[in-house]
Image (tube, rainbow, N blue to C red):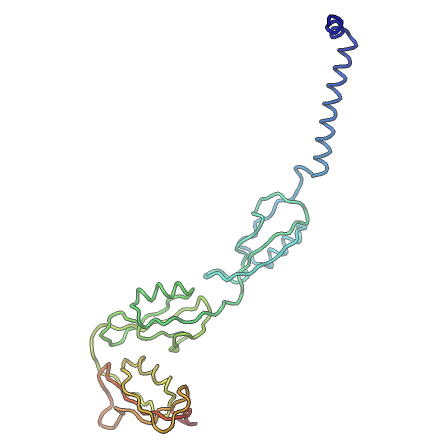
Length: 261
C-alpha cells in the first residue's frame, strides 16, 4: 500500500494522468465537432412570412429560397380567393434547404349551401341561422303583414328563392319582413295554367293563404299538377283582397301549357 501511495507522487504517474485527461478532452471535442458537422448545427434557412400573400407570390418566394411546397385549399368567408391563410412551419423557423412548406390557400370557388327555411323565424332568429350557414344578410324591406319582423320572403340577386335552393357560400340574402300593421289589401294574382308547386310558393310570398285544393280528373303524379281555376279570381269589379285571404285552387294532371302565365 505504501508503494502505491509512493507511485502516485512520482513524475511518471503525473504525466500519465495528464495524458489520460487530455485524451478524454480531445475525444469529447472530436465527437462534438463531428456531430455539429454531421447535423449542420446552427445552419439553415429561415421560413419566410407567407400568410397574407397571394399563392402565386408565396410560391415564387419559396422557389427563390430553395423550398419545396404543398398546397391545401379551404373556403374562408371574407378572405380573398387565392390568399395564404396558414403555413407550416411558422415564419422565422430555421429549417434546412429544400424543406417542404405546407400552405393553406383560400379556394376561388365557394361551395354551395342549401337555403334554410327562414319563414318561421323573426329577423333576429333569421340572422343567426343565416350566419350558421355561412351566408350574409343583405337588404331588408317591409310589407304589410300582422307578424312584425317575421320573414315573409327571401331574395337572392333580386329573385325570390325557395328553401333548399343551392347558393354559393358567403352570398348575401335580402329579406322581406312583415311590418306588423295588420291586414291590408293586395292584388289578386292570376295563378291559372301554372304549376301547383310554384303557385303554393307565390301564394305564400303574396301574403295570401292557400285554401282548398280540388283535384280534377285522374291524378297519377302529384308532382306534376297544373292550376286550371282559382277562387277568388281577379275580375273587372274585384281586383284586390285582404291580406291573408284564402285562395282555393282547382288542379289537373299535367304541366302548364306553352304560352301560359
